[in-house]
Length: 215
Image (cartoon, rainbow, N blue to C red; front, side, top):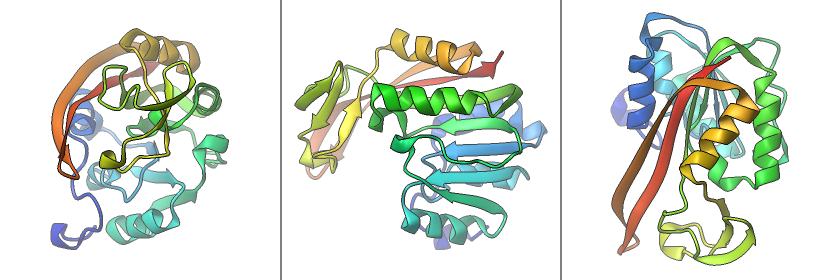
């Protein structure tokens, strides 16, 4: 991997990706990790340090190019628009599935398609990490509602004007992961924080982090 000063894009993994990694003992094993919406590979960099087999899926060719730069030739890159379904991920089963910044951008039907397809690819006892936005997030209700809790955003201050966002209740997200991924042994942590974006206080940012193993 590159020196920190040479990394393109985000330089550090999500703090809750780090917590999940160590609290679930993933530093004591290796396997295949797949991140959906992996961007430039900041989360996968943690797994790379511990010798995991890496797959990054993202719609942006530029982000994937930066991911290759950051992580080297050992990462498998898949360019795909996940709103159109799960792409071919190869034949190897998935030991860890990371979805830290994707579900909010998928409609209910699109999320169902991705999750149910992913379930078929998970190894026995695979670990899953999900982080997405809740209905008390700053953005919810700002724009045009296109489906229940799904909004075409009017928030230029967050850089997301015109993008679709689906917001979850805590119980709704957990139920979805249980029903569509078969998740068990669940930890759910609410994360709320203020942020300044384009000179505007965005408060609260409200996410739910969920991790567990498949049955």
